[in-house]
Length: 216
Image 1 (cartoon, rainbow, N blue to C red):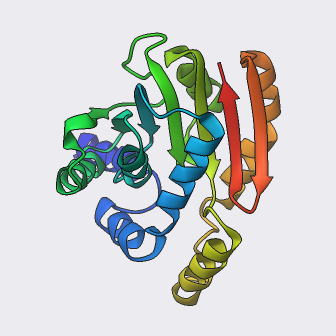
Image 2 (image 1 turned 90 degrees about the vertical axis):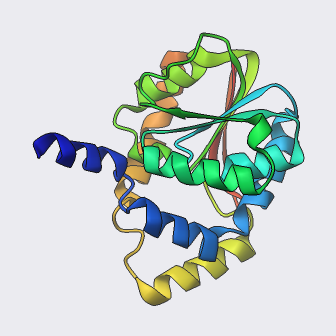
């Protein structure tokens, strides 16, 4: 029983179960992912090679990237249930041929050094237990010259305002469970980047959201 309970806690660490998460993504957040995907491509100029969607959930961002590039996307999450949903949608969207699904821990990614051209992640990093280890793993698997685009946002001010109004109507405190983690990560990142010392890192904080853009 304890083992099963621990597994459930691990899989649902983001604060909701996969079915509820999937419903909210499909019904509320769905417009943001194509916009963010376009912004990532414009910033990184990466359209081919291998992409890792870290903490992918149901794979909405990775699928949006796959739809507009030649990238082969590895959908990576600690929840097998999330990955099952990501695989289902990738199949429905005809991108399954350039998709891989990997269950695992962001602090110990089972991928080879220098094997990925770009790592993307939206909304997952506040829930990582050890940011230094997680970002270290991301840099380890990135090829020299590869990019990471990690953070959170809604793509545009209009989308942010619309989604915030929708979410707040039903649950005014919907951000309370993770806002402290977001603040802590943002405060920790400058020191983490200084220690990991990538070739380049830039903090983006504008209407597109808050992101760290890293070049190895």
